[in-house]
Image (cartoon, rainbow, N blue to C red; front, side, top):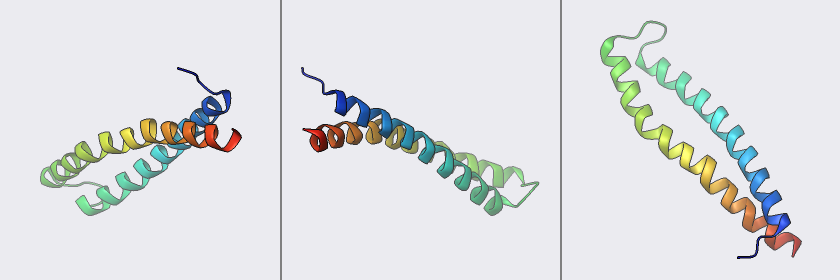
Length: 82
């Protein structure tokens, strides 16, 4: 399999953008879910609800940020520079 240098550069850029995307979205989601759960000292029920929602969203966001972004970046870099 022939790898393009520009494709690798695109994948690295995609990985960096995916990391930034993950960090920003996780911070926003955690704040919003904490607010929904009851502010500073949420009840046990509120904490359980937040953990249940985050348990599903974290892996989905990680996959999108750390797999999809670099793959798309690779193909974009390869196509743009070829």
